[in-house]
Length: 195
Image 1 (cartoon, rainbow, N blue to C red):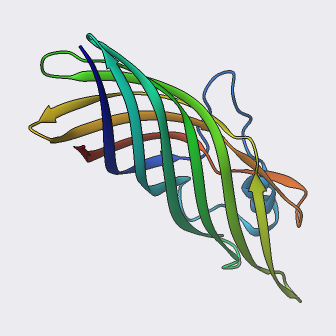
Image 2 (tube, rainbow, N blue to C red; image 1 turned 45 degrees about the vertical axis):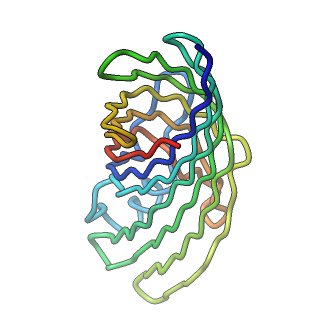
Image 3 (cartoon, rainbow, N blue to C red; image 1 turned 180 degrees about the horizontal axis):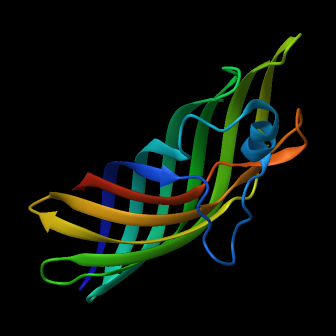
């Protein structure tokens, strides 16, 4: 039996921007460069990410393939131990790719790969002994890469979804001439509705 399905999904989770998936990303050096002058970070590298996604796929028997579009969003403020310098980060990602599912009786495992676009606004407030600088940097990652795997548990038209995602998205920050990782490794839990 052939069917077409659409899933609308909302997820939240923790994304560690310093973790790297083997073979797809390089660790960012922007924050560590600032730490050399301003002391250790008071915060860790984990961000709270919200994801809205749209998935369309065609089912043939127990297998399905299709495409998905995802909107990622998170904000983070970093402060430094020695002098209260700070960096505010606001990141938005629009990712799209191919998804492959297996439709079991009680669960739908899936995998996916794709690319997209990440944009970021970085506001620096850096203090030194005799000076203080402020800068706002806008940047974009044109070709990030991600892969993911997860599980959907259907419950009569809606369900629960659990996803593990690995994202390579490094942005060049011109003030330091260093890379900042906007991706990393994340674990997300949410709900979905099928149409």
